[in-house]
Length: 100
Image (cartoon, rainbow, N blue to C red; front, side, top):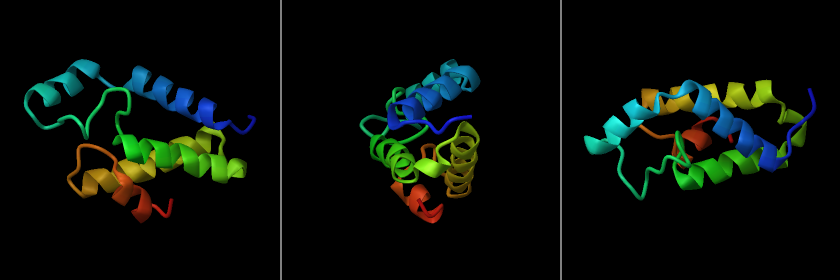
């Protein structure tokens, strides 16, 4: 597969979330107050706005690693870090811990 451009990385993330995330369950978390604006936005999910921009920027800086499998692998890494930190969203701190 070819390396993805930043806009393609964003589209890839949106497709993954759209395919694998149960939006009604996420909406439930928002109603319960476990995900709240401005930190949470469905358009940025599962990231904070800042972390999503940093995640995409990482792949524009490391173009040789911007294949879908690499993006998925890093997404798994940062999601695991967020989970271990008891965070509902991937934030900049999670990215730092993943050396991004």
